[in-house]
Length: 385
Image (cartoon, rainbow, N blue to C red; front, side):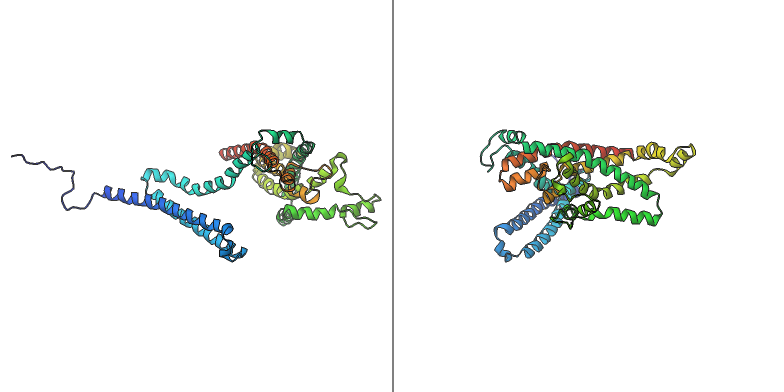
């Protein structure tokens, strides 16, 4: 008679299940619960947001009520999504969960960016090859129309002019102001920086309205515009300043507004860079007989180089997208048009979605290399710290 040999590793009859099995079942439940919870929460949020446009009567056609519901559902839904996402990650093996936690919490943000930025960008590229109603494809006709247009060539030239002048002048003035403010007393430095930074609190449209009063021309002897009031007091004749195309004066006057807005931004960053220069280095240069001019160019500027490049690139990207100032003050008349304003007119005034999309694609191609360089520059700066 044969006697069965018991497996020493097998659990005894009636004993509790192995802890590994229990943990595996719990992990599976967490993963399943997390996935189901995320899908259900996402579906509920999508349904609610879609109801704003499909069934506005549910909210009594009240924009305020829709806004309140959107905030509550958006914030609450995001919190619930993160809860289920955390549950899913906790259900994974420990080694995998530790490595995935940062990516898991970035996932909703990346998904939102993809939905709101990447998808529209791809759709815009698609529409750039279609007709004005985006109903049929026309190949490269929209791009041929753009590059054959005198208005587009003029806008390109104006954008290049903005690119050459605005970033350089902004950085130069910001550097000068930062250096001078650094030599004031603590109170004087704070007051001067506050005054110069103040325009940053004004929107582009608001700044354009303010400077529109400065450039204003009135028929008659009495001038409301500050510039004309000064000019006529000095014996000159009142001018419609934003119509003077000679030497691109009207475009330069528009650039002054953006420079005025951004000098404060440049000053703050460059002032921080100046304070980061070791005082011992400056004192050593003075002991060696270096003049203040030599200290500025040979000590301060080299050590501020990274910040100067950062400010320059940031303003450069802003200039590539400039729109508000031109739209409010001239709307592109008198040869002041820029690419962004040209896009606005093509889409909303002429209703030509194909050509407008092609203009945006060209603008995107112009901005992307600068953005890539800026990201690489930031990484290099972080590595050098």
